[in-house]
Length: 195
Image (cartoon, rainbow, N blue to C red; front, side, top):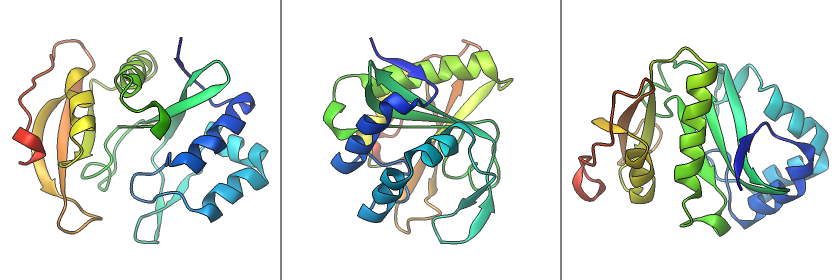
């Protein structure tokens, strides 16, 4: 049965295979042969970067920014890496627009099997147990109907649509999930992914 865990060395071969099949750690920047080669060249250093995330981050425009404290969790079954959940412990000005508190991604070969919904539910449970957040923000591209369904299934309530700050012409949707159990899935987001 899949579970949400801290990254482990035994999952690295499967993680690298996931990168090669199209899994991406960052929705703003797809993986490249060079980025995958860096993971393969020093898997020990890569694993350390997952367990102890750096304090700075390269932003999508190439500039450097201060990283918000966050935790990287892997969704895995046995030795197989299935996907990841990133939980940010707070928001900065950028993440309050695009990124939010929780991000998740599944490897392409497991899409459509309910893993994203289950991994997000586990990530929300981890957040509830480990952080003092009362609610969390999730942002999603308005065209990503599958992810919108996952968020709403986990209690996401649509708040607003904004122009995407990194992708001109695209729209980012804001959803809030109440971690105290008072919220319920609304199912009333923008029709067909459009605000």
